[in-house]
Image (cartoon, rainbow over all chains, first blue to last red; front, side, top):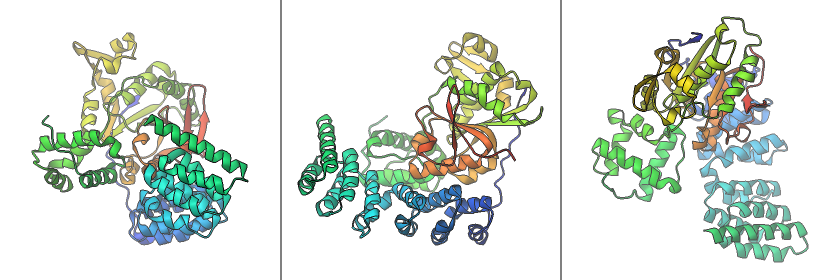
Length: 206
Length: 281
């Protein structure tokens, strides 16, 4: 028979030391950086080194592994280390950080209020996505608070898009107030109508 | 089973956090009934009188309780030739690509990464024997793994009921199985001996990397149980377990593109599969 069973006695490959892992993050060899980026998640206190290496990283695959490791570490420090990347001019860095933050329930709960109040419009727009991972009531509350004070139309649009998917009936008054504040912006009027219809339809099914 | 009091919110949260850290599987309030049923079963089995008592047993791993607990939470229902279109893709396209620069006698390694009671790896074996004309030219190694050690024992035994065989033609049942009793069959010894089974937790890099690199990985209907971070981690682990140019097959409702950008999408006549970029080293 051409099928064979090898007597597999799996052996754990030797683990690199903390020093080797951290040095590997700066290696000229992308394979070594990939390995180091993955191993760093299992080290205590590696968040700072990962966050420092990320903006310099040119290999998309290694960057992905660095973000995954920061998300896996999942501490306040590792998640906060990604926040400056939301302001980056590099779109891959921005979206990588956002995806990693979105995968953390802690980030949505703890960091969202601060991010939705950020002076940078782009950060507020991106941060609306974080609300998707919250329970409907919490997401509605956070985004409605934002809608009531937000002066930037594009931030409102981002919040409305998320509310259309995860919002509940409690969001309807804030959506109505937003529509009244921006009657001159047709796309926002349209988006609010769509979100309102969806929330009402979802409410009638419950 | 005697009905037990519901877990408090705090107990439920602590249990789900523990389960997540151990397995990557996420359970929310929506699955409370499912979770509680399994906890009650384990409490009855271990004789624990309270949740606190049971949780202490779990955390100290008394009598290998962690593995028993994980076993209780896995979903193991499957059958032979499930998602047959991917098996067609395996022999019509994937194997041809994988052997394009292999020599006769070279190894081809295939991993069924969540094999449950063995239906998938044995299906792959039978399908290759029946449908791949070059099957005799290479040494084909098939590895089945699961996080649930209980199902691996059943996989090694290779006995199956009528439901598991429902998609197999009678001719193949006659050829590869021995009827043990009414509605119970055992896969032939040669096939049982040709597939190896081993416990692997896909979100533990230390466990996945020990098994080396494969030409093709089947990882169907598993990642759906993980949260985003665990899915990303599992995808990276699987990437490391693929040879450059190797393929990964997911379940029909799953998309690697939504999980990780590491893989190239390949559209074949029979299926969409994902490929680790790069040429073979």
